[in-house]
Length: 201
Image 1 (tube, rainbow, N blue to C red):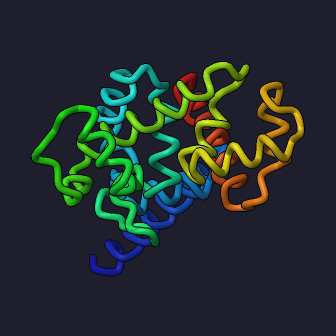
Image 2: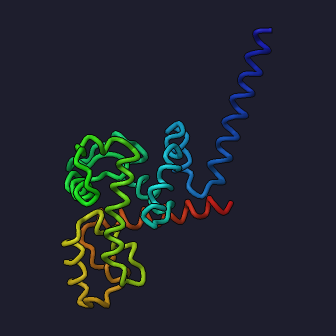
Image 3: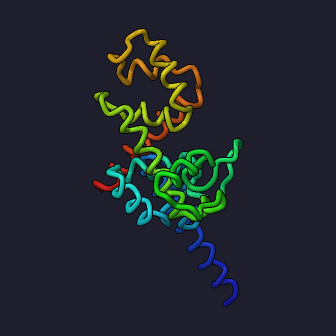
């Protein structure tokens, strides 16, 4: 009987591994799928909060989710190398701007470890970037570059294009001399498309 149970167990494990392999094989992004399994639900745990914060500021929730994935891999306790905190890796300076604009006198930097607060601040700040670049045909790459590298740096890159106000996203991407920022934009826009494709399935 014990021998039979062992055989059944081995068959079940083999079947489960085969099924998992098939899912990964057919997935458009096997690495992401595997990461989401190991994250034990964390990759979708904040979907409702992300959607609420995004819609409040007129943003695409899938774009915001892609930013959260790239910034923190959905880890609300993450601390960046320059002290950025939480899901959207918000800096203390950006958070203080938000608190002042929203007249929130009780804000302290550790509030950024609260997922809802972090998403509120991050989407508010990103929306400001989109507003800054709204005259562009595609303001998203400009706003993402702004979020990642700062407004002055983006202005420098635009100046480097020698196209001034006529600079488009393709010009900006070629002018970016921070490989990490270029990859940041590419990663997020690709992940947004991935989420959009998932929604259509």
